[in-house]
Length: 249
Image (tube, rainbow, N blue to C red; front, top):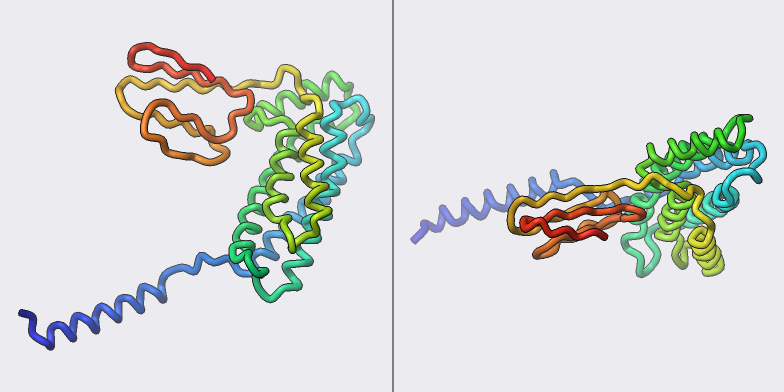
């Protein structure tokens, strides 16, 4: 049996360590100020790419996807401004949306990266060179961007905006317009007919689970076989099993 003093002492020490742990644990909750700064980061980079798109000469000779992307950049900019105005005018998360600031910060971080990717792709169309020369540069830019064409990057950017653009942050009409923009990008002809197609080879020399993650999207864990997750646009997976079985998807 423990001495009463020992029990009391251990309880005291435990309380001190719990308090110390709580004081030193980082607060992962995103604040309104952090969400506003994240939105401001996106607002700062958007005008630059809008200006770059407007300065491209003879856009009619370029793929229709470029024209559609350039037009919807204004929609992205206006929507980000609406979200920023709403967040600045609130004292806390709207009712029923406790994680909205976290969602905004994460979506803005992804949006900034996607806008930089768009800038790299748009740069290929700049200058007074021939359309053929520009398309060759564009193909190289797509390859450097992991195979994602301009319409695919823009579609993903609009998807990130939709994560933030929910009622009551923005009105229902704007949400409908954003969804229509994504549908238009789904229907636009591919900007490259022979887009670079990455190939990923998976070699499993033993029994058991083999997981493959392409780097974008969600990674899930299965209990057996071959699992492919993430974005898989125009990707070919060749899976060589132990018995030299091959599965392509």
